[in-house]
Image 1 (spheres, rainbow, N blue to C red):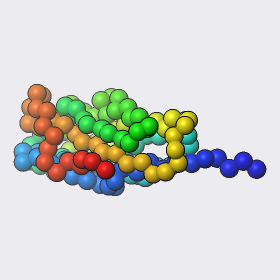
Image 2 (image 1 turned 90 degrees about the vertical axis):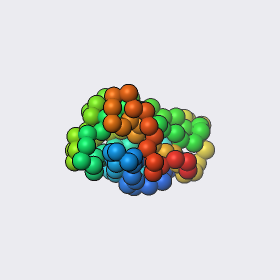
Image 3 (image 1 turned 60 degrees about the vertical axis):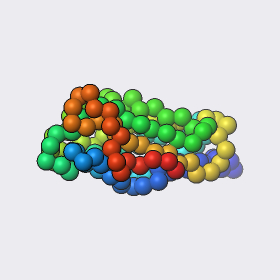
Length: 133
């Protein structure tokens, strides 16, 4: 009997705030702990909520993961609206993490932050965004 090798990927918080003085956002992952086999890709999905009384431009994101894993944030750009109205939210796949076939066994952590703000040209990484591992 062959037992498949399994790796765990952990983004440190199930829900976290990505905040700025003008437009706080909250991001809640559907699951912040996903298990995957070597050589596979897993998708992190979640809900982004604008808790402010003003619209927020969702201009970009920052995404990191421990090597040798790799990340792809194309799903954020395909699924996120350009702006999120006051009190508005969306739920969608946000990014993929790929485990190479030679990845060591273990738990891997990463971070995800939304970049934007009060205008289409804002590139603020708001105070309170999750950084580091």
